[in-house]
Image (cartoon, rainbow, N blue to C red; front, side):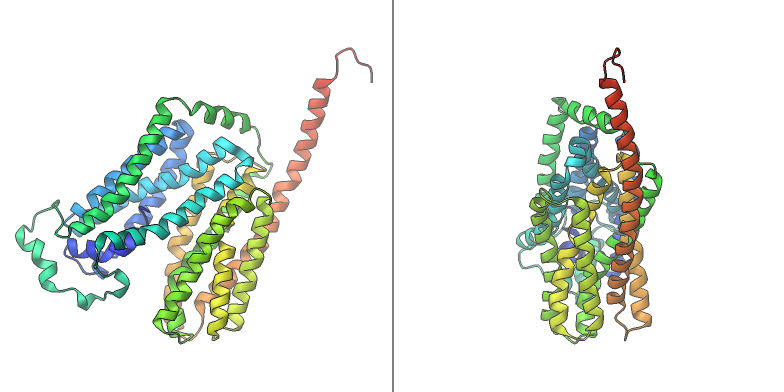
Length: 425
């Protein structure tokens, strides 16, 4: 919710700091850089600090950032605050995955799916909450830079040009961020209560019991999964970001139809993340990754072959969104079956996904501008689906071969310890 609230309130934040939309676009870069740094810092801190305490502190920092955003009156201050906020979100993103693995280990696939479903649910609810809080304020999708009146932009600046913090002119903006901030504050209070009641002892004992499991190609698996998530998240964000403009310019859809295609992609994405909670109780993470790869490959192939067909785009977008939904949580649960994932390892995955989120959409945007007649977005989806489909069997081979040998040796040592010292063989 804290990340999703920025989109529908972006116009109001820009007006509040006396900027147009393009002038405040660096806010997304600042947040992405903050998430990247927070993921790296969080991966180290989770090795030395109590997991529950660090999670509570990062949520408290997120709450403070949400309450301060509407009071920022300069773009530079808002971008700086957004970077600090992104760092807290990066710690949360890493820590949430770490604490699930610490509590449930390789049995935590349903819990991991539930965690990532909550991300999708929060991103879905945040725009609705913003619309209720902002009332009749028009969202960013219906705004262009010429619609911003100079009088509205200069109103707060004329009052005091040196002002850094002030109550926003639009109190609905304050209410939108305060609502999300209050919810996150309540959750942080519960986490502090868990810490002070020393519930986290279970986490420590479980983590220490699982620390011994380490695959022979541990580092190679981490690097390959880093690359896997780089292309997976990059393709997911690229498709969700560019499918609207692709549908209108390349396929020739009306804007309302293109918005429907965009919505059905994210809708099936969120719905399948919810259903994956139940699927994970009866399917292995590797099986879910395989099914996701097949669905992504088939749907993206059909979109490339029939790139001018509106019907194909509707159907394939829904299948593609459903196929992409479970890959990230299933990938983490799958690797935990073969080798222990520490805080640094989880941070490594999050960094890979953040880099894919930042790099691939930017590159595709440039290429789409250079080659406007080609469906570059669809080529990206197909190329990423082929790459991940080829990469997963390689990771599976590296993970299973050493593990079988380790399990055999472990069974032999257990049998030898179980034999009486006086037994004759």
